[in-house]
Length: 172
Image (cartoon, rainbow, N blue to C red; front, side, top):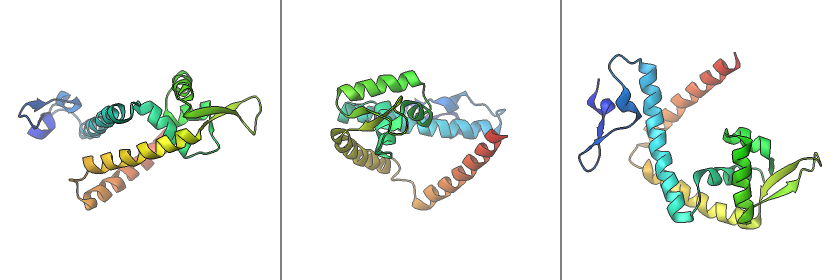
């Protein structure tokens, strides 16, 4: 097994142990691929979580909910937010309650079904999210700046193929 797969060396010279440190030579290539992708995602996500909290005083789930609403100016029902974010309805309710107290989102009666309500960004929420999203994008660009554009394009293509195949398998 490659030494970089077993452990990587951090900037301070210490071993950087992560999910991949569990692997041995006997593990299947697919498992090694999955853990490599998960390790990369986790590292980026942890850094984004920290920066959002430090810079904007907001959690990643709250940012993600606002991102969903930004794409749907007329709002989304709680159940739809739950499906899109892949979390429970209770989590969505808690996040929405927090954002509503901060006047970043509001609940509105659903125009299609008066018994239901939707959540949408307030004007203050749209402004706050626009600022956070611009900074968030710069952070991602910064974190991936050392990777050549051709490599990024190749990874996007390969992961797109994987996603399509996984979607087909899910529907079987």
